[in-house]
Image (cartoon, rainbow, N blue to C red):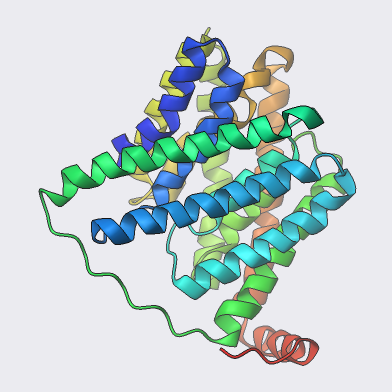
Amino acid sequence: MPVGAALSSGLPLLIGAYFGHIAFGLISSLGGMVFLYLPETPMQHRMLWLMACASGMMACYTLGLASEFLPALRFPALTFMAILVMMTLRLYGVGPPGGMFFIMSAAIGAYTPVAPDQFPYAVGLFALGTLVACAVAFAYSVHTLRRRPPKPVPAMPVPTFDFVVYDSVVIGLCVGASLGLAQVLQMQRPYWVPISCLAVIQGASLRAVWTKQLQRILGTTAGVGVAWALLLLPLGPWGIALAVMALTVIVETIVVRNYGVAAIFITPLTILLADAANLAGVPVGTLLHARLLDSVVGALCGLLGGVCLHHGLLRDRLSSGLQRLIPRLPI
């Protein structure tokens, strides 16, 4: 699985390095992260599932990229997408990594400078990245299904108002508010704040949210040192591609065991995916300081959102108020 994820994100970068367009490869590499949503079900189900996730990620990136032309729409657009994505994922029982890469695609797209005539080109590059991931996933599935039987398709979760609607609205509002806070504070790379917020708020309990925000902050702090050492090397396009692939293997191997340790390597990986095309014009210290500050602010926003999600009395009152504000849904 880690090798498949590395190929999905790394092959577009290798192609971009070969043709001298690493920035194009980075856009496609972001789309390649859809590989992480591959389930362990029979072939026909897993490929249909993955292509549905790819379509959703393409939609999020497209809407995020479109909001770059109207900066005032970034906050409402990301809030709306976060609510809709979380509702859909909870309705269909999508597990980890949850809404992480959907929102990451939208947030990075919202701050990707692109000329209007290059808008379809950027969306096409992202779509090609998802196609590479689907091709790698098919080959990976053929290999693994010959060695062990697939797991049965899980039953759809029983939808409830609180699980599908209330939780999604709270998560979406917190993610959007974290971006608004980053804009008010005039942070250099505000798109990392909602990503960090979502990573923390998706904890299954308040204790899990607290633990995850602590792991996120400490892991990012240590990861800044790893990123510093990595960025001091003369990477070049080929070096960036190989570094992303190596870091992906490390992260996907460790994250299922300890999120805090994985966060150490997530930090340099995400910096390369989002900012590798612009490293030459930004001092390394400035970039890493901004990344650490964004993660801390986002994690604290996620912790506050976790209180709204998991504090019993507060949850009951907010859920009752939300049900009075919107029509009763047939779920």
